[in-house]
Image (cartoon, rainbow, N blue to C red; front, side, top):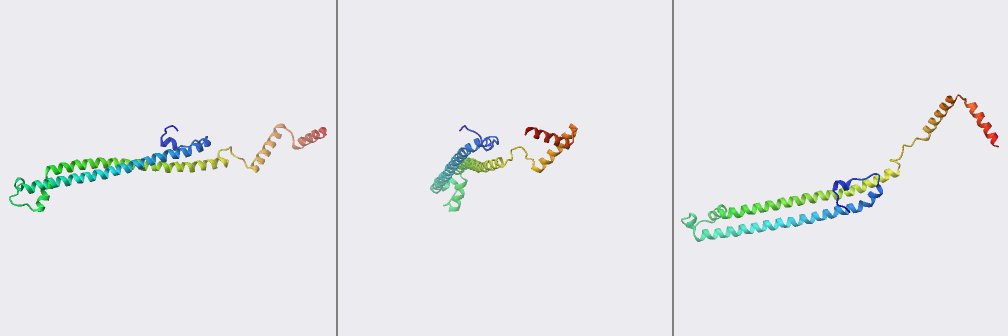
Length: 197
């Protein structure tokens, strides 16, 4: 099957319903496979995002521990004249340039992964809609076939009583045009029938 877009695949050629029926199941499978691929992609991207968050958290904890150890080893280097409190150390750690750098890099990496995840979810939802549309296409095909079978696309049908009225009016009009009365036409018809016997 050639590669076609969703917009092309969802259209129905009313003059080739047999062809449309033939390709319906293939179209559904094509879009179902694309949808399954999008679900797989979304799961992989979601897991990647979780790993990035976990890794960034681990890197921040390592940096926190490293800076914490430096402060405890040499509090004077960080402006303390006596042993610093836990709160003071924690405040200094999160304001330290090394910690801020690791945090900023982590945030940037997470934001890229979140954007990738959002795109994967969008693609999945679009393809989910495409598979639903292919199901709707099947129902549309069934309805088109029913319309075709019921004569929806045939020439208009004239009711019998209306045909009789039109036929009588046409006959009367023709008789007048020919200048013959109905009695003359009947006599001629009778004469022709008698000659045939």
